Length: 480
Ligand code: PMP
Image (cartoon, protein in one colour):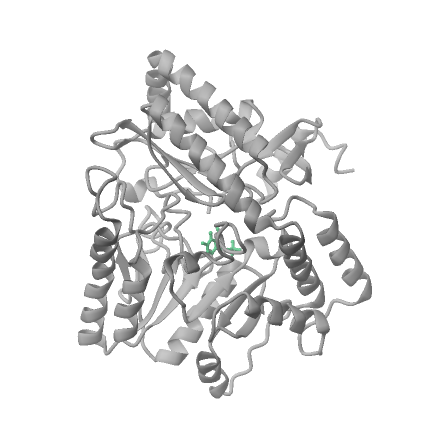
């Protein structure tokens, strides 16, 4: 039935019955994806696409071991976590083993938003403070509580206003953020200190005015903000400031966790810190909704001491736990972390080489299979090449390669493929990008015409754009 429905009918029914706020990729010509295998997705005609953006399908689309685990458990029992079940405690123990002490108490939920919402609740109860510090351009989820701490969605035309208890610190973007040095030779740690002290200023103010901070929440590497890699020492100093103001530190690992950075299981480890609360989701179920909050016994005790039961109907159900355990099996057995390191380094090196060839590439950054290529029209002024980025994403789709773009100016090409991505896939991605960039280098006219077209037609699969629009407006429609 599903296979036989023409694409035009799928589009018609979707337009009729699905909220228009739920936006499609490639809105003017959406993809109908019917099947996935490893790093590939197939449309209804059998056309195969190389998936360079789906960090949810972490161990590869429809991995047989994960599918089998879900199918088996589904045929046995799926119920709530008020009953004892081995899959749940095994999962808790396995996750805790990947984390540094004292992170050892788990709560299972169903999505990244729910995980961050619970993290904030824990922080509030534990500290009894209200002020929350978040980073500019951050996204932490779609729940009302999370939109409040997600500048990515705040202050948009018609959108919610930032609450007074939310404080926004500058994102530690050393290429186009508040503190940048004119070349790459400067001391990163010095920049890390400058950015961290911005959080410090907020902490001191909060302590003075409101008695202390509730939480600092941040992705360990900011993805929605444009694949930002914080400078060395940044989180360490931030955590010191936050703890001096009696706050707790929440690491949102929803996008970047589970070995994506290659060198470590969790991205916060690259900054040599131990958060008080870690949230995880997306890759955890390889497409099945399962997420978790892991915290310290002390914080979990404050929560339990309220006497209020925490019950979550689906959180920690045996099917979700069996699937998450199977995902961990595959990460270990297929040594996907090492692979992310090896393939990621290859991809980053090849993108760096491309930078020498194409002036449109201003910056290449990444860790493992979390990579960003920032496009600029002028390397001196670092002016964002937004229209060009849009053109490239669409051209790559024509070449059957799916990439996306992000950042406040939508000019950062994002690569975060399933971890089974190979060096051959990386070569194909970079070779094709090289060709598409050559088309742009060799012919300035189409770029100008693309710009004009974009300026008068602010319709995109993910964004509204115009160089004339201010940053907040530009944040409007994002593919969080
Ligand atoms: N945190 C981050 C960093 C995210 O990227 C997302 C989703 N894009 C979320 C939280 C929310 O996760 P979910 O969509 O599963 O609720």
